[in-house]
Image (cartoon, rainbow, N blue to C red; front, side):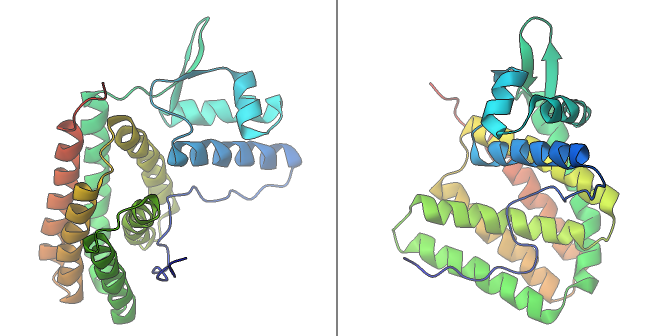
Length: 242
């Protein structure tokens, strides 16, 4: 089994922070929500899918009460909507959703990377760069498997999460995490996770990482914006599934 490179602090799949609570009911609601988000990240819940509350209790392994209590949070985040006589529908991916989600992402990350230019330590940026170069070496070896794709996705999202969290604003981090779930639905629905895009993404990351290491905030922000827009265009231009 290949030894995995240790990722920089915060480099992990996007997860929503645990909300402290003083009651079992609130704790179960949080667990239900976290279970729901993990199923989005793993592809177990897909864009446009219809699902009932009772089906969710089975899928999440949570009581019906906890599932019912989390639904308003899902609706407020634009992740589901209630369809009369049909149940809950997971957000449907369309061109408007793609453009809106990537616009929100770019607005938040442009501010984040400017701050990160000054707050990140040299040691952390070194680790981030080495992790990306390691992924590119693994990709160039010709052995592309699910482990590599999963590791690259974790590194990709983790770096963006880290920059946003470095703002130190929990409200912005929460908004960003919910938007990341929409982006995950988009990427899974349009099947844009492949070897070619993996390499392109890592190369684009390295451009803004090198600008970060030079403490050039303007250049880092420009490279980041170009990366996000390229990601958006790859999604828009992705071939539809037969």
